[in-house]
Image (cartoon, rainbow, N blue to C red; front, side, top):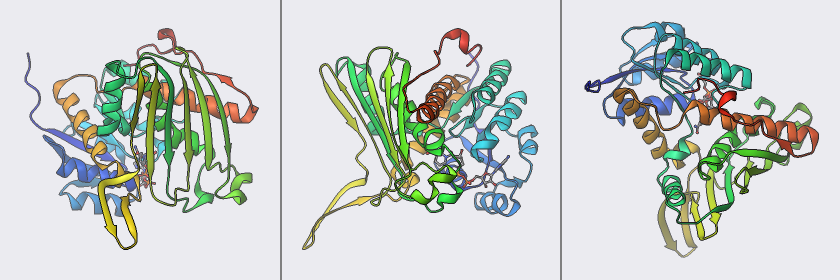
Amino acid sequence: MSQPQTEITVGLIGAGRIGASHARILAERVPRARLAVVADPRPEAGQALAQRYGARSVTDPLDLIGDPRVDAVVITASSDAHTELIVAAATAGKPIFCEKPASLTLPDLDRALGAVAAADVPLQIGFNRRFAVDFRAAHDAVVAGAVGTPQLIRSLTRDPGLANPAGVPPWTIFLQTLIHDFDTVAWLNPGAEPVEVYATADALVAPDHKASGLLDTAVVVITFDNGARAVAEASFSAAYGYDVRAEVFGSAGMVTAGDGRSNAMVLRDAGGLHQGTARGDVELLGESYVAELAEFVSAVREGREPAVTGHDARRALVVALACIESVRQHAPVAVATMTAAARPGVR
Ligand SMILES: NC(=O)c1ccc[n+]([C@@H]2O[C@H](COP(=O)([O-])OP(=O)(O)OC[C@H]3O[C@@H](n4cnc5c(N)ncnc54)[C@H](O)[C@@H]3O)[C@@H](O)[C@H]2O)c1
């Protein structure tokens, strides 16, 4: 048996908000990883982030991908850049971690997954909730049969702020936000596949922007092939801070995960009880980002498939696209069947 590579040299593509968080984690928190290069077409952003961790910076991500000293690539660029970056990294034979959504359309995603399969490189998607301790414990309890047969599943995302409603691309609530919840409810209903969705959405937070395509509030009912029903909901205006929760109700009990608190501290004073809530995702779910990147680096070192794959990305995207169709039609929409034939070579 070959020994795992001792240290993985990582190149990070995209020096924006989540890129800065992932760069810090790779540089400071992930064992046997070294952040060596940062790529961003905005030179000042790439340079500033790279310098913080003693890494180099480039403006062309292809220079990073083609660098023989880079063992693995972490993609934190804007979502519309993901497909081409996955294809380029796979073609260069590099293991890939890509933030969600892996692509925004099914033809793009299948092209990316085709390149990954042809190169036989690991691909992990940034569905970080799977790495949050309480979500993982809930999943393990479901797998162990602790709640019996799953019947009702729930997942929600409440984002604290809609700073710039005009800058939100149409359908973001499904393609970028609820995509997490679509992965979560499938993961919490192991072995089952979604067969139908009924989605309703509106602009309740910024109604003036509805005409230009903004939807900031949504509820989706998902029917699975084992009969379980899931409800996924999202809002872009949680006044109290980022809030992510899930629940599985089954024939023998119920399990819940997430409670929106940044930690379990309770302050009692003359004003009553006070608890901390996290303003943003990287505060509330910080340790899940560490765990998912540690999983990626371990998978690369050990030459194995990571815990979250292209198949998971495809399932969640198919559900998101069906939701868009459901909103357009004001009707339930069948989810394209995820047969093995429909996903040839997806690693
Ligand atoms: N898993 C999560 O919880 C989570 C949270 C936030 C963001 N994300 C995802 O991470 C990605 C980035 O989000 P963000 O909030 O950091 O966005 P952002 O706008 O802050 O940053 C995006 C960065 O990508 C750069 N970029 C654009 N095209 C590029 C290209 N072709 N090559 C290299 N860099 C390029 C931009 O210059 C910018 O610096 C998105 O796909 C988003 O959905 C995931």
